[in-house]
Length: 307
Image 1 (spheres, rainbow, N blue to C red):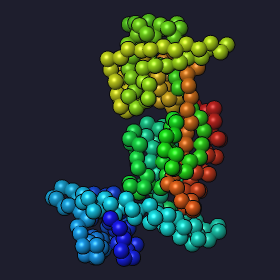
Image 2: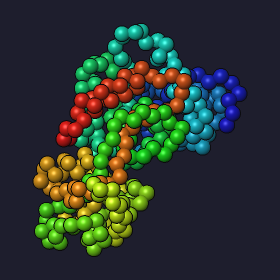
Image 3: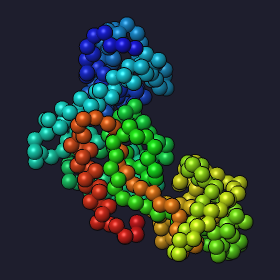
Image 4: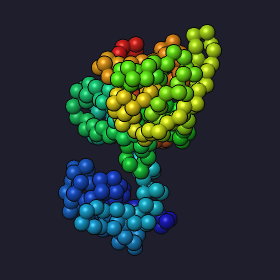
């Protein structure tokens, strides 16, 4: 699709909201306007382009092929323009307003991020914040996300990112499993144990352990149980299904609750980074910059504390 005429930005914003919300009523609520206004915006744009942008059913409204092409070409420039206008129009010292959509995994959100968001929201009462949780790596532009907090190793080099901190990975099992099978005394013992694998990882069955003296031991596990989400992985391990590796936030929460035991603590596993990522553009919206700065300081204050 090519743009032969200038497109009404309000209409494009309405199209994006309908696509993200899955319906005209929900889109109107997000935009703070009426359903009739959103419908008019979409209809006007469809008439101008000479093609339908949505397929409407009784259950959901989805984009047509033309609608997908429109957002693919037009949404990124729209977000960049909004960010530039917000930057230019934000007086120094003025409070933040508008909306801020933040995404992260459900586990990390509940264990750490949500508390920081609550404190940040209290500092900026005019700012509306939507916190989205999913183990899926979301498309920031397509889903209208202002900022994501991701754990691990970044793969999308097109995004802007800031490293906020680091996390360890811990080997854990439930007390019931250890009572039944015994605890491993060295990494090599793990090959003979039941393993619960997290399929989100690139190599969920191969792990390298490093001793305090620098010795490296690489172990290949066998697994009958696998999960594609950290929350269900933790539930399986706590139920005594086997041993696994978890990020320190999930592991420490389980250890403190008595549902998990950390194993081989003298052996170190590869760590990862905690990153704030947002869509590329010349201007970073003040609300994004403010939250990233706030969260970096929030994490630094709590470095070394148990979650």
